[in-house]
Image (cartoon, rainbow, N blue to C red; front, side, top):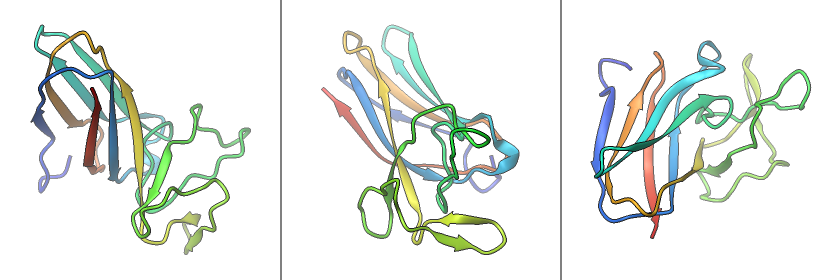
Amino acid sequence: MWDNYPDSVIITLKGNSSHAYFLMAGTTNPMQSRLVNGEIIINYTDGSSDKMGLKNPENWWPIEQDYYVDGFAFTTDAPRPIRISLKTGKEIPKEHEYTAIRGFSNFGIDGGAAAVLDMPLNNKKQLKSLVLKAVANDVVIGLMALTLIR
């Protein structure tokens, strides 16, 4: 929610869908950990909606790095999201050779990475719109692609 970016955006949708897949990249930081950084809201024509929170570190990871997760002291409480290298376009495997971000992290991603997120939808309802909304301060949320399963 920076002054040079909008707090939210609305995208008109039509038809129906059982799932929405999002390719997203942006920022988050330790001060925004364990809380919702943003929301994806799918509105239906009947006035109802489905919502998915973008929560660091569950499904919202920073563009420049992956998280160190050992399952004990450092856990995300969620499955690792699919990460796509913005430099190569390929999926980043768990065994990826990371780069160092001096004084900050040993899990840097050369060229950055986007996340693929899956949101189940009610395919019996007609889609109206998608709202992408920033909730936390000091985060930037970018939607690069949306695929609807018809």
